[in-house]
Image (tube, rainbow, N blue to C red; front, side):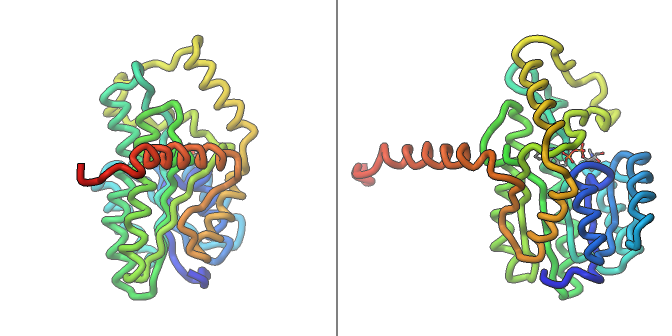
Length: 282
Ligand SMILES: NC(=O)c1ccc[n+]([C@@H]2O[C@H](COP(=O)([O-])OP(=O)(O)OC[C@H]3O[C@@H](n4cnc5c(N)ncnc54)[C@H](O)[C@@H]3O)[C@@H](O)[C@H]2O)c1
């Protein structure tokens, strides 16, 4: 989508971090932005800040992992802005647990917010974007953990899912005038490690307490340290705007993990090499 000014966008997880960066960059490019988030106070604060500048933004509170709430947020968006052109499925939660620490609730929470909300978002907003015939774009925030698996299995699975969904939909939606990008950030300076602040009541008491000592605690501390020195989410917002304008399939934020992605590709290639030259009939 080369011309962003005057278009309308719906951005989830927009009250803070990367989502706020994306909402800000789009609003500054002249896009009308509906910010959606579960966290009401942060959403009000974000809107207040954004409205200090000359932008057209509004907000709607929703737990995007609940389809009914997401559908109501979509209705609020069309009621406010009429047409919607850009969908950004960005809301996400860290964790979900590694082997020995995950629970059914931790899987449901991570999969619900990170993956199923993306599925519902596309299901609900896809037809809204299609129906006006002006074209549009869908960006979904995965992670570099959607291409190389890190320590948290539920998180990895949810993010690989977002990459798979985006890759599949790109070909499917292009003829319908909708571009599809997947955002795979590295370490970004956000509150992602404090995701439990938004744990829905239905999962309360169902997640393991995070350890304060031992290898997992050390790993979490290392990630906390890296995140605190991570990339500015406002810069990520600018990259996403550029990705939408130029229809990039993959939006990366930096080169740190490129060698690890290459190592994964090399391991996959080695798997093919093991059977190269064998008779496929056998
Ligand atoms: N920070 C990083 O280093 C990093 C790296 C890779 C991917 N990501 C991804 O970026 C996205 C944004 O995360 P962030 O880093 O900005 O973290 P963040 O915690 O600062 O922001 C996440 C936002 O999502 C909202 N949210 C959480 N659950 C929600 C729900 N059920 N419904 C609606 N909104 C909800 C939060 O209130 C918050 O505003 C996530 O999908 C995350 O997995 C982050």
